[in-house]
Amino acid sequence: MSKDVYVLMEQRDGELAKVGVELIGEATKLAGDLGQQVVAVLLGSGIKDKAEKCIHYGANKVIIVDDPALAEYLTEPYADAVTAVIEKYQPEIFLFGASSIGRDLAPRVSARIHTGLTADCTGLDIDPETKLLRMTRPAFGGNIMATILCKDYRPQMATVRPGVMQALAKDKARTGEIEELKVEFKAPLVKIREVVKNEHKTVDITEAKYLVSGGRGIGSPEFFNELQKLADVLGGEISSSRANVDAGWIDKSRQVGQTGKTVRPDLYMACGISGAIQHVAGMEGSEYIIAINKNDTAPIFDLADIGIVGDVKVIIPKLTEAVAKAKAAKNAE
Ligand SMILES: Cc1cc2nc3c(=O)[nH]c(=O)nc-3n(C[C@H](O)[C@H](O)[C@H](O)COP(=O)(O)OP(=O)(O)OC[C@H]3O[C@@H](n4cnc5c(N)ncnc54)[C@H](O)[C@@H]3O)c2cc1C
Image (tube, rainbow, N blue to C red; front, side, top):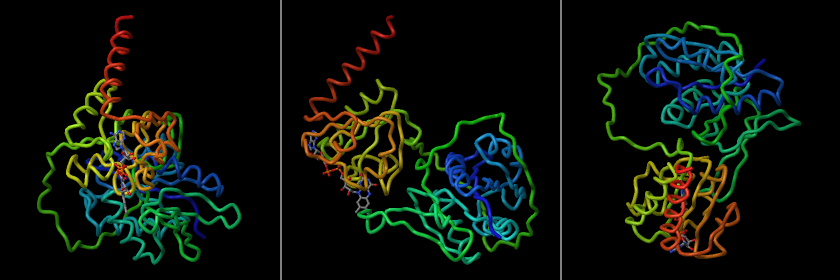
């Protein structure tokens, strides 16, 4: 009999990835609706000290597979470990981050276990009647949202992109069970000869509290310099719609949306962005949204908390000046 909601806790160099912590937050809701528990699965080498952290973020139980075979991420031993966990414990639901690791691992595991997998979910909930996991994701180029069920096989498996779900606040008073599982690893067919770290530093826009985001309406790549000035006075970062990424105006790491990143900053400023469904999918969870657009019927105004109808080229420099003045006045107090 399958039970409990399992989450793969990704770690790199012993540091837990944010997406696993976010998924524990979501798993807590799902497990609550099922009357079941949240189990974090921690894989790696020398990572046992991270188990407590999973509990502090909401896991009721942690299963650790700690083995030198898992020191670096490799598809086969990681798939061996997750498969062993599923075969032994029979989870009802298993969630993975839609990161490069989760996207590689989850399909491999689902094929081995012979169950379904719904990739890149943007919403998860439990059907109150059937108790099945409803896995919602954009389909047909983002034009519709599809809700997918996995009725006949277990676990019900989904990947979720980083930033989509909300982590619970860390509570060091939480307690839970920690269990270690020994796994027999097959000799991998692939060996890592060298790990070459990408030295090119990319900014993680999912971490920014304030995002000043530019769309095609900014008119030129140079105008990102103006958006940067506003981001600097706010203490935030710049981001973009896909239109400007495709035009080569800004790096893809700053793209917000269905095929970019999902962000939930305290403030999202959409500057010259129309509000296409694929863009909105990546920023609608923002705490507060300000939209600047010269077209008063632009769909972005439907979800903005404040809408400013006008030319970004006129408004942004004025806003930057006003925020800088307000900050200077506050500092002088
Ligand atoms: C499968 C698929 C995936 C996609 N993924 C993404 C994604 O991840 N992220 C994403 O962003 N898009 C994505 N798109 C593209 C998306 O459909 C839109 O084409 C894109 O978001 C439009 O970008 P935009 O709002 O910057 O440009 P536009 O839609 O061209 O809008 C520009 C806006 O600027 C306004 N404007 C023009 N000049 C000014 C001015 N001077 N001052 C103020 N306002 C002005 C206009 O009124 C207009 O509303 C995807 C599309 C597909 C099919």
